[in-house]
Image 1 (tube, one colour):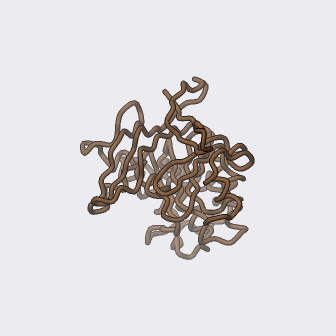
Image 2 (cartoon, rainbow, N blue to C red; image 1 turned 90 degrees about the vertical axis):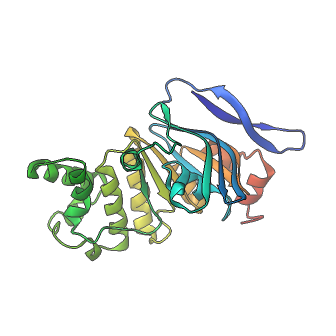
Image 3 (tube, helix red, strand yellow; image 1 turned 135 degrees about the vertical axis):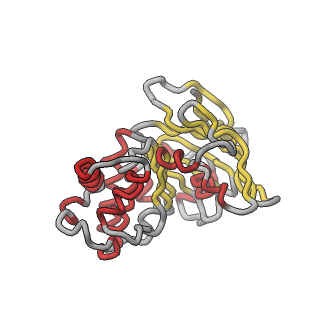
Length: 276
């Protein structure tokens, strides 16, 4: 497998177009190669190549409209559901290019789960929010379902708060609890990748901290990708950070390097508030 690196030209601009062999100890779970996204004739994401590793959190940052959420939605083919959207390039998962019309989206999203900006629990009980999808995929037996519900809620650091009210509506929970329930629902499918699209933007600081701690606690067995406008959050939770600007993935590297020693002037300007 290969990873991209940033190279600097004589004008101090950084391009991300060189491939190097990765240390084999880093297991690449998901990789994009030359991904371009179009909305009709509008070319909104340009030739983006990134690799996501097991046990790492990758943050996608950049100003509004820069392409980071578009890129995130490409990773589990959600852009396919947008009328007029076209995604070109390779998205490699489990040894195959999933960016094909033959890919089974229902099965794919068991392995590449997503948590959205706003909590979106089902109009069901807390228990059924977790058990619903596994039952559709064939899990049977009350003992098995009970064990999975408990395991998933514990994984989302929610079990102790809801264990005595599993038959209550999910909408009886606070916003932060609902978001953790949605994460538990995702964990129940044992995904290899979890995509987070601004998961804390609607939450208070205490709930935000709980979600950040949760991401760090569950990343060991999977890769996590998070879109965030919160620079403090990106620096706290991520191992690697990619900066997007005007449809280009401008610079990617270890989070400490991105925030402390940015190579591209556009990234430096963004981090110092020269533009938003």
